Amino acid sequence: MNLNEDNSGFIKELFLRHVKPGVAAQIISTIGPIVCGAIAGTVFGKTGLAVTGLYTPLFFLAGFFGTIIASGSATLASKYIARNDDRRVAGVYTLALLLSVLCAAALFGISILLRNPVLTVLTGNGGLLEAASLNYLPSVLYMCFTVVFYMPLFWARQIGRPFVDLVLTLTLTGASIIAGGLFVFVFEFGLESLALGQALATALALVVSMALLHLSKNRLHVCKPQHIREDTAELISLGSPPGLSRLYRFICLFLINIILLNYAGPEAVAVYSVLNMLLRFITAFISGVSGVQMPIAGVLWEERDITSLRQLAHIVFISGNIVITTAAVLMLVSHKYIAALFGAGGEMFLPALVCFCVYVPFYVNGSFFVSWYTSIRRVKLANLIAPAQDIIFPLLFVVLFAAAGGFRIFSF
Image: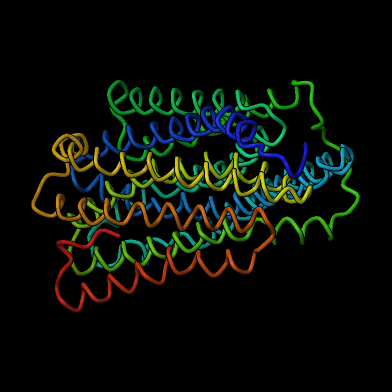
């Protein structure tokens, strides 16, 4: 590639070719949890929706570990792909896979040991202890499988196999909806069966996608890692901005759930649960775009192709803002249907949704900056943006609203 040439046409074609299946795969992956959330709200009422909301932070905790390992390793691998060093690429992949499995196993063990304290903190004085207890083990399993789930998501794009993303998410979505429907409507199991269905669906999708990755003719194969300390330190550094963003989100959701439950009751948690399900769509869009942008930008940065980097940034930010603003408007227009879908009617919902739709464009742009600065190795700058948008400002607002008695309009 000529570094002084206008490559905007090539960059746009490359980006759009990979981002369409990438975003589609990410959005499809949210359909299963959202359908299960709708079943929880319509069949089990606001208690079911509130309990689902209490466990939503686990999705972001899994994302924290999974993204640091998968995103960091994929970004690191872009350096070796640019150098055509397939041996180092395979070594980084193997190391990341081992770290993901070990991390998931450690999370499971810690969660089982701390079951009672975690449930006590989760439910507080909200009267949801019994329902939350039944959901605990299936939700923990779902969290642990999700940690490893990020590996095929990020690496399929890295090696130019976006179809694996689609297969992965279609399998996950289809299996989770079928399992949830069978467990609740056919076998008449309780609320906990929805989380169990999602856990089993994630495990199935993970097996299918990893098989496709290894059966495809590409540079990925399992080998003995040669530079464990060096590569581990670098992948953690590169994966920390997007990963920490999910950790901040986990802390924020966890604390806000507790505050809402204790000061505004289960109904407020139920409304907040719906907003977090909508946020999954937004997060899916961000992950789909970032997952394509980061490896491309990483290779361009290694080649010092500044012109193409600027062209890529222009495409990402313009197209991203158009899509996300349109989505926010559509959510506002269809607020009655959203409330009916989740059984979340009441005077709290619409004001909360309005606040949420105002917040979304700012959240998306902040996330784009985080992934962008990570791609060009400005990790410290990326790590300054993430905590501000994901934990500091949201918690500041909730404290202010709590002081003013304004939980009815709080949504972030």
